Amino acid sequence: MEILIWNECSRLVANAIIYYNAYLLSQILISKGNKIDKKMINLLKRISPIAWQHINFLGMYDFSFKNALNIQEMLDIIGKCFDEELLKSS
Image 1 (cartoon, rainbow, N blue to C red):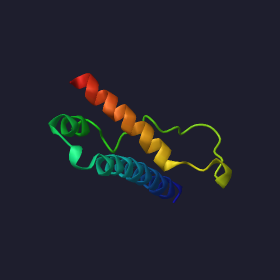
Image 2 (image 1 turned 30 degrees about the vertical axis):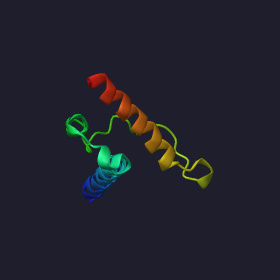
Image 3 (image 1 turned 90 degrees about the vertical axis):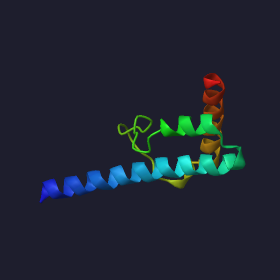
Image 4 (image 1 turned 180 degrees about the horizontal axis):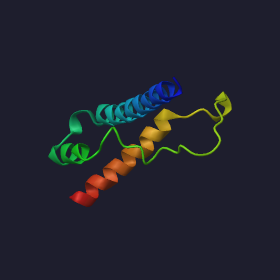
């Protein structure tokens, strides 16, 4: 029973990571609007929503609202990095 619970918890965490990454990628696409070109599409093909290198699984977590995550601020930073990567590939 413990192994089944462990497996289902792992599946829940994996699905949360995939949703989180897919949401961020979708928001980047929405923010770009009609400015999508072939270079941007090629860059997006290399980004996997299954990636988890940027997520810290270790440490202590504080789930209070005093340290709430600002998704829009994060999207702005990711968008700038995305634009810089596009400039490098030009």
